[in-house]
Amino acid sequence: MLNSSWILIVLGGCVLGMVLASLHHRRRLRVACADPGSARRMGSAVSDLHDRFQLEQESRTEEQVLARRIAEERATRFERMFTSFDDPILVLDRHGEVVEANPAALAIAGLDPEGCAVDAVHPQPLSSMIPNRVAAAEIHTLSRNVMESGAEEFRRSMFELPNDGGVPSTRAFEAVIRALDGNGRTLVVLHETTREREMARLKSEFVAKASHELRTPLSSIRASLEMLSDGEFQNLEQRTEFLGIAMEETDRLAKLVNDMLDISCIEAGVARPRMGCVDLGDLANEVVGGLRAAAERKSVDLRIHAESGLVVDGDPEMLAAVIGNLVGNGLKYVPEGERVTVTVDAEDLTRSVVVTVTDTGLGIPPEDIDRLFEKFYRIKRYERTARGTGLGLNLCRNIVEQVHQGRIGVDSRLGEGARFWFSVPASHPASMAA
Ligand code: ADP
Image 1 (cartoon, rainbow, N blue to C red):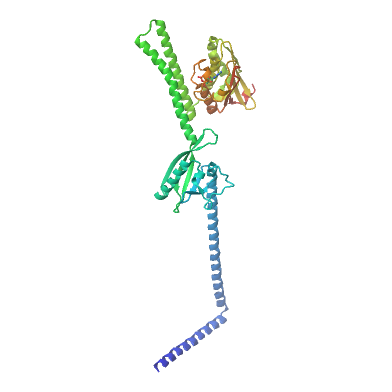
Image 2 (spheres, rainbow, N blue to C red):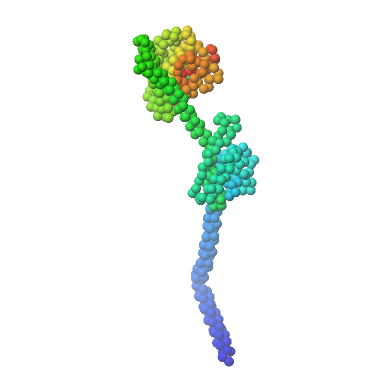
């Protein structure tokens, strides 16, 4: 009884609710019919909502497209950087196998970048990419160390590879190994150090040769002074002779030191040339005038064909040193009675002034000609003909090429003399008229 009355109450409530709801709906309809503006407002609210939803949808898609494009561009940029690096770069996986290699790395392995795939699908053993077994094994071990030590760690390894018939016979590399990501991949960047190694070798060769050259006059001076202090001279003539030797060797020493300093200042770019307008015709006449006495002493016929007005921008003292060196060599290396001729000409084609020193002396052996301008280089068979340091021509080359942006050279036939020349850009069109 109680239950049925409850059901009735609930059902009654529902019916009442339905009646009330229908009455409310009808009222709304009536209001809507009575006010068409309200219906329009409702419709436009719905369409606004729809538009906003669509806009949001579109902008979200645009953002995704933009993000994808940025990611693609970044990937292309990194790919381009990776492939265009001159330094060989390798990526190793957790097993130490190569899964990425840029073209520079493929080149040192002797692989063709077009026809060779190195990637996660085609990994290569490190030893096939670095053709030096010991170096490959060391880099392998170091990459494991780096992987175990954490992201900030890196290791270095130095090694050499054969230079396939090139000079020098080996190429030097330094490998820098870093962790690349949390998946055990490592990055190996190889930096070629052949040039640095060559520079270091040349430097120590220079020091060794310079010390050797300095030692000779120093021992000679010391020997002369020892004899003087021991009173080992029988007469004044002998004493004067040994003092003369000591003086001569001191001059030689001073020249050697000055030449070395001048060369290293120019090479280091710290030389301070006093540039100005230099008439090379006048300068050559002046220098040759100063060497006439020496030429006469050796009975060498010293001639000059140079007119005034051949002007260049240069340091007069340095250019005089070049002419003096070339003419001085001519006098040193020609036998008595031979000829040394100096000419100064304008060269229209290159708009420069050319100074030529030609002699009728011994000439240069073909095997020596390419090395003549190297530091301390002297032709073995002429070492007894005249004394020298082997620095004169190197200093000339530095003055002409580094300080004056000119050119210097030599041509010769053994036994028929030599022709040394240098050219410096003309400073004024008027100088070309001569
Ligand atoms: P140095 O004359 O002091 O030895 P240089 O650098 O001026 O040094 O010359 C280098 C070498 O070139 C000389 O030792 C000599 O063997 C050779 N040489 C230079 N000029 C001539 C020349 N006119 N004829 C033959 N050999 C020359």
